[in-house]
Amino acid sequence: PAKTAPSGVRSLAMAAPVPPPPVPQGVKRPAPVAAAPVDDAAFFAHIDAHRQDYITRLSEFVAIPGVSAEPNRRPDVRKAVCWAKDWLERLGGAVTLEEIGDEDLGDGSTIPLPPVVLGQFGDDPSKKTLLVYGHLDVQPAKLSDGWSTEPFVLTERNGALYGRGASDDKGPVTGWLWVVEAHQKLGKPLPVNLRVIFEGMEEAGSKGLPQLCRRLSTPGGFLDPKAIDYISISDNYWTGKVKPCITHGLRGNVYFHLEVACSTKDMHSGVIGGGVHEAMTDLSHLFARLVDSSGKILIPGIYDDVAPITEKELEAYKQVDFDLETFKVDAGVDKVHGELLHKTKEEVLMHRWRHPTLSLHGIEGAFDGVGSKTVIPAKVIGKFSMRIVPNQQPDRVEEQTRRYLEAEFAKLKSPNKMRVIVDKASIAWFREPDDPNFSAAAAATRRVHKVDPAFTREGGSIPITEVLEEVCQAVCVHIPIGASDDGAHSQNEKIDIDNYLNGMKLMHCYMDELARLPREPDAATRAAQAADEARRMAANKWRRRCKVQLMRFGCDCLDCQ
Image (cartoon, rainbow, N blue to C red; front, side, top):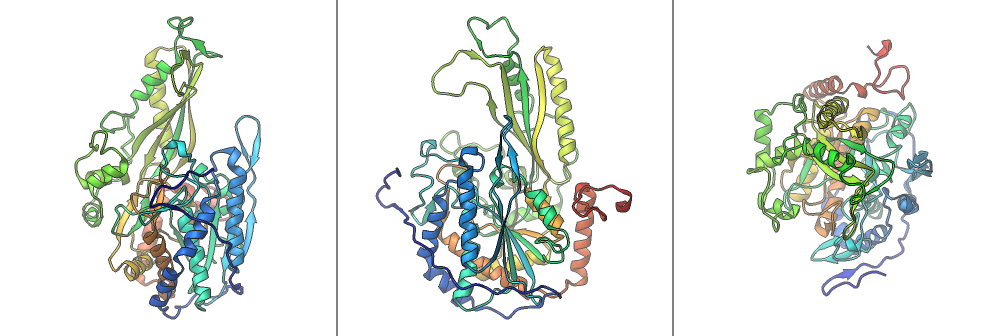
């Protein structure tokens, strides 16, 4: 049963949605042309007038506990996928579900992966086509984790909507649905053709999605490069709570499992302790040699490939809305010690965005329950990851880390068995924000918020960005609508109602701005795009699509030399 809401807080009921009329489909052929202007005032008024409808529907969606990382919740993930599919169909979209196979659970059993939703609104040959990505799954959450209210009961409090997935990523995903509906109710066609790809495994590594994207990018496919002009993702956050942002960089991630085994069974510390080499002792020594207390990674050579800081980059930090004291509160350190690793705004942002970092996450196999247990674990697996930055490559980071840990383990002179395993890896994504897609997003931001956006980078990773850019041969822009204190992945995740509604207005204006872009970019833009793509291709060989086998990437065959 749901926890009773405290005074001043209300849990939001669900209402049955009413399907709007369908949008006709056609056949795309020639290049797009600019669309007619749209009345912002009427559209904004419509969004504001239907505020409660959108909140009620989001409540319905948040109530689905689609935690992709927990196999027993996989039916709920599929339910979330079907919820999105049903709404896309009610709105008149052409919708398909793409099954992507099974997941190996590592114990000899498998479980079906949730299908991916593909939706399409319009195929007008005179319009540009925008591809939107979002995810329908969420992180684990329980009231006992420290939530103030039930995490899967959307709760309105002080102008915000609290619930797991409210900001990451159910709020943004539903925002796109309601923008389509608003155009229909206002009798205005979408200014662009819209395609959406929504998955249910983002929080568990997007298993199966890259392979699907590559399959769909062949001629005539849903992601055929000839069909997609622009890509947009809304799955990150402002750097503050006031100034909107547009994101042009993400860090990559290499996630390691460091395994140490000393026995075939757990042992009694009183009976056996003092007579064997303990796995936990070895792992603790190795963990302590990865990173120091100042945050510096101790692995030799790990900083060698990091791109140098330029004057242009240093200047860019000045336009970012970021307050150190607020950041302490958002991070939760203010009531513990109130200290950050770095003293200035610029230093903190650089170490979150453009420097690699290493974090220790946990130890599998060790006792972590309440009370005391005098056990010596037979095998422990330390979990740690590195966020990597432009010019760093996962395979090189893996090699450096493995070589270093093997050398450090040898110094212990332990007879125990040690293994280093990479669980998952992704490269960093970065673009200079001078592409027309970024210009459209910036112009849309000015129309809604009446200020220039801050161009920011993000410390997290969204690996599908690189995949979509490659297969579609189009530029992606990240347009966050959530604020810095939304608490994604944490207790009491929320989205401010103003941000939710303004996000819909921004999506509308963004599509309109895309429609207004010239049919072809000017010479300067083409030159900048070519230089940027050449740099990216040289740095990331895996991005090269084989000229013969179109579903093959990272190609070095003779045809592609």
